[in-house]
Image (cartoon, rainbow, N blue to C red; front, side, top):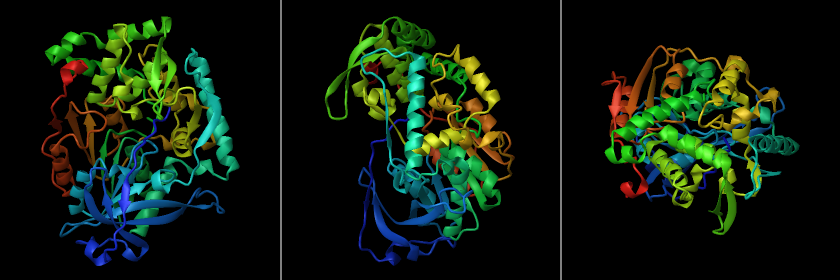
Length: 497
């Protein structure tokens, strides 16, 4: 889908503290502090932790002997355990998410895992502090207050990608270096830099995609893997049919709450009805821009399909999505301004402005791609799906840069005996629970835990998840294959307040 822009920042506060005072108890695999800088990480909520920040240089494209070198930057929190193990590398989702930024909202997990080894917050190539790639502002834009057909919408985006690929190439950026295979090789380079024989990988969403790819590059140098919301190597483009199963599970959750059930007796019917109304009569409304001004906008059916593709990630955001559909069904305008803007596609975030793209996620999605068989399935299922084929907009980038595609061999499900722990949420509308199981079907040493009522972003949803990770890291057997967390109120906004 069109990339959402994280407008979040973090603060790294350097202190003149002797390195020895920041060391804590070090893993025997720890990198020499001479190549790093001591500092104190301060989160958005003013929590602090002593650590180090470091950088290594890697080839932009290892297939080219003359490739330029690019930075990989990371933050390392030293181990605190008495007998700590291999470094634990956090792999952010996206593609395009910042591992360093993730410390802000997963601070508790980063600190808890230090008992098992150094914990590394990595900004993958082309992301966060590791990015040296300019953003591209194309010459393409969507009219804010005029209707645009699906065909024209897709073609304008494809043309924006064409323009931006030329923009990046003209600036010496080797787009063939921005793929998951190269990122997996970066992990091995980071392992060597850390002086470790092996590492533990800890990833979510696209981060799981990267971790699974790493099994093909450095399996013997991976000690363990902890994943949530797994995205298989052939699952960059999600199946439209998965949405139907998710909506059935969401309906069952809604039905368990009498007031929510009264408001939403037929979620699929509501969505289909609103889409039909928008096809006949798009809704004129005003959107608030970043500078606080408002602009006229024509809300179309496709806009709601793109918005839904993001909001179905978690039950709380799904409740907000149901608010939007209920308002439109009743002839009212949805309260978009009441929801964090990061959930929305660029057409809503920046109405009437040029389509802007970042090189890393654009190239990564094209490279992981989609095979012909799965593409045919997506095309067939999209005809009858409530969200059509907008769950992942990268589906529409097929054929733009075949030279970047990693091919079907890359997309084969990995086989491995490395111990893997996977958490899957029953109310995750982004990575379907059944698809997640298929993604890890070749892993012989898999512990799969279903988290009832959890969505896509589940790591911090229950202390039971952290306890299960602790047992896994300690080599202990899991205490069951299911964790149940409370279901949030799914009724209309007035009932949730």
